[in-house]
Image (cartoon, rainbow, N blue to C red; front, side, top):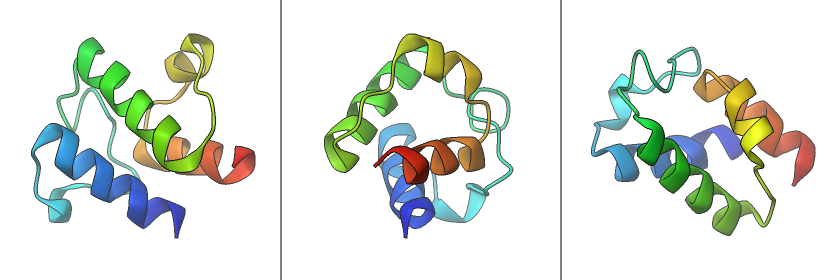
Length: 75
């Protein structure tokens, strides 16, 4: 499932326990991702799902659920 894999990637990238990452978690607010973290995360998502996350798309993604929906719709 896309959401589970994204949670795995976020957990690894941000060094967080998977249990704190929810679909409704905001990447920057709840999970503490900075701008460089978001770039690294985007690159990992692109590699894993073979999609492209442009800067415009990244700016519109706020929650883990938003990211999962975008990936599921574009993979």
